Amino acid sequence: MSLRGKAAIVGIGETPADRLGGKPGDPRKITSQYLAWAVRLALEDAGLTKKDLDGQGLAAIYTTNHSQPFWPEEVAALLGITPAVSLAGGNGGASAVSLLGQAAAMIKAGLVDLVLCLAAAAPFSEHGRDRMEPVDTRDFEMPFGVMGPNCKISFVMSRYMHESGMTTDHFGKIAVTARYHATLNPNAYLRKALTLEEYKNGRLISDPIRLYDCVMPANGGKAYIMASPERARTLRKPPVYLLGWGERNNASAGPRFQANPLITGIRESGRAAFEMAGVSHNDIDFLGLYDDYVPIIMLQIEDLGFCGKNDREFFEKTDFTFKGDLPIQTGGGIINCGQPSTTGGMVHVIEAVRQLRGEGGARQVPDAKIGLVTGLGAVNYGKNFGCTAAAILGNSETVR
Amino acid sequence: MAETSREIPKPLPEITPVTQPFWEAAANGKLVMQHCSDCQSWVWCPRPACVECGSEKLQWTQVSGRGKVFAFTVIREVVGRALRGFAKDIPYVTAWIDLEEGPRICSNVVGCPIEKVAIGMAVDVVFEEAGPGIFLPKFKPRL
Ligand SMILES: [Zn+2]
Image (cartoon, rainbow over all chains, first blue to last red; front, side, top):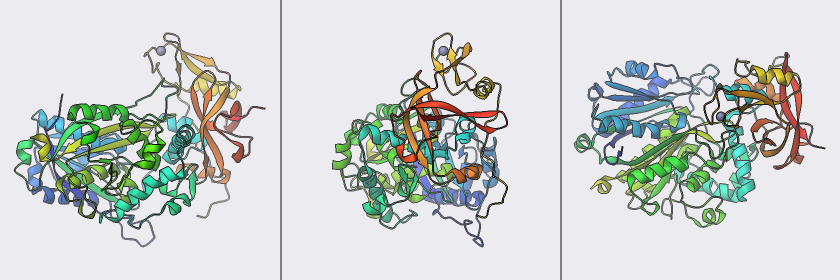
């Protein structure tokens, strides 16, 4: 089923990231407050009211502290809306991009003509229980002192450096570029320029991962509203259309007991998105790649086919800034905007909408018509990401 | 943060009907993994059925315990309350070991200075007691 042009993003809402509750005496703000705030911003952006959401679609993303089985219903109760269809985002950081396709499918099927997709988390203000871990992690990683994703992605990065010969110069260039974009994004959290030297001097967290390779937790809420093309054309802002979409979970490059961890499921979800969109690599004006760690950005650029595997020269020669050959992380990415648990997956969707509306301000990609965003979630035992999704978005010119 | 004098426990595996044979063998100094009688694939981590062909005819089979370091990291910071018990061991090495038979196992490289650990290094399994009756398969450099 092609979803090309069958639904559009018509509203975005993003609260500033903060770390309230991290220090004694800080005012506290809880998840429901960030949710309500993000939804209000998204409704205002679209020119809709809360009442418009009754009888429509709701997609609520589970977060670390809110994974109760009825979370979408609780969100509806917190906001006071009555959805006709509820979806849950259970793909971790990939959920925001994954739900683009699921919401568009519901709209194309005619079940609803609006879908509100949202997520929020307040890890500094809400101290949750110990999280439920997957059984492989609980039984075969934690007893050995595996420190979560930091450790697991450091395995991937260690192998990547071994096979590709990439050095801190290569990783640092990506980190510095993303931070440069964050200095131009008023909604970013880390907005002070980062130098290559500072990147290289970042303290080792889990060799070879250093401080500036890692995403930073934050409190915050984010939302987007999708609509049918007919509805979208009646609303306030220029619609941003879903052109292509693909998802692949539990991908395994090679036998499942010994997969190649340097090939992610983005290879397949990205290919599906390109096929549905009917566009080529040259048509893509910018990339927003899920970035809980710097090396993962590079693996995705390879897996999407913008260069070959281990292509050091490509990473050395390409200008990844918003005015360059292949702009990436134009708003600074999750690494610089903060990661309110799985809400972080919204960062690239929201930034892509801004770019495709021409709202990119000082970091606007010139003449941006088409952007590609990805989402990643969970890190599987002995491999890389369990959940992967890719979407290609375009402005009105691309669906004529 | 101030720590109490009693030792902070490390997380232990939960023994389930699926994983019990693995931990029983480990307590007897044997590294075993599931092997599919139908498609001849190895299956790791333990599963109720073969993740390649779906067969439930999985045989627990002893493997050599010989392998090579495929990737590794040095843990330098504790992340998360559940893992505070590892603070006193820092820095230490966690690694992916590719066994001669094929499966990749996540474990520690022990009995070796951290700076000597390298990708491709040959290692052999050793079992370390982590709790009552729980023995973890770890890996030391082959002499
Ligand atoms: Zn089989």
